[in-house]
Image 1 (spheres, helix red, strand yellow):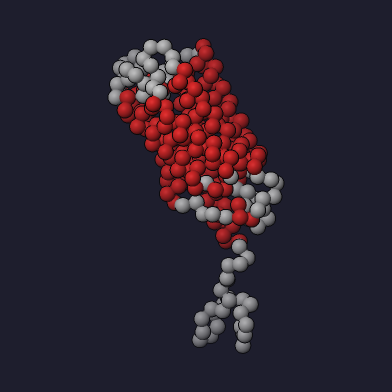
Image 2 (image 1 turned 45 degrees about the vertical axis):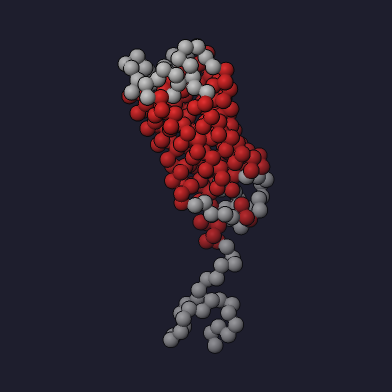
Length: 237
């Protein structure tokens, strides 16, 4: 099982922090009429927003973090990693299609939908790829148990929850008054799951490494000599 580098944990942990800091700082720069419960994150990076570069820059960094996580999260499998990278790329692409100050934008809506759907579906990709008993190279233990975040019930439940939150956002867009709140809750949940997955894979790798039978284990020290590995020819005299 491949190790998850420490920088990947920091990258995944920075995503939700960056998202909240971005919409907080950008929202504080808007006129008094901006309401975070009613108005969307896209408006903070859209045409006519005050200092739109703040939220736009955060979206770029956020998307880069999703792509970076996808590159190193080998335990998730290629389908999930592709969806996560696609979601990150679409998040970055949002700045190329800003929301207009008046009316809607089909291009912005399409890119945003691709981003949200890809980032909501990627947990299920690993659940569908992994069989009940996986190879030891991607398992958390020699018994063939995948990391907890990639087990079918957990991964499918995560995708179901993210899709429910996305559905709530769609309902609010079509006639609600809490569109901004629904979008923020959904976006934060989407940003938190890669962190949970990375921590799960990292913990699984540590447990797997500790249980590997091919690693030498030092025996008790002999009087006047260094520790002896069990099974060494001539051990014990």
